Image (cartoon, rainbow, N blue to C red):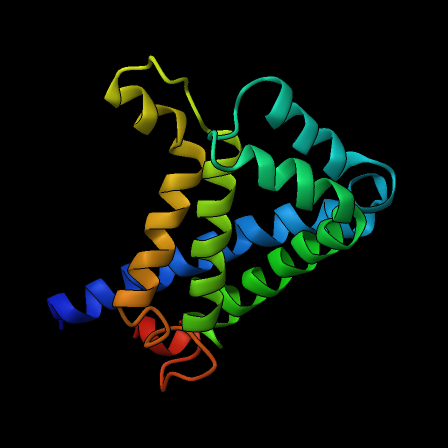
Length: 166
């Protein structure tokens, strides 16, 4: 018996949720397992790069300079463990909405911190410069609007892959 469109959409949304979760686990693992990012200046390197290369939107530069850099080490740990929490929540399908809110805020923060093309850039370049963060932001928005935890999650009736393939 073929799957209904709703069942296919539910699976597609769950597949996207799990894929984004895997990406975030990959992002988190190098930050947590190695200390370069958290304890040895990796986080500060990126913030300084955003500031010196003009990647930060003008309203975000003072925040990066006056708040983020002075609190760099705790914020580096926050970033690393937030990525881990977001990744686990999406992979397991638990706390998907709170993880999606956190992920959306995180992606918008990164977008405004690092994706500024320049004040003279054409409109399309703002979108092109933000692809690495805006695509994930749209995924998180989709998880908020949809029910990506309805399939293949600890909360769904169909929480195993084998039970949904039949």
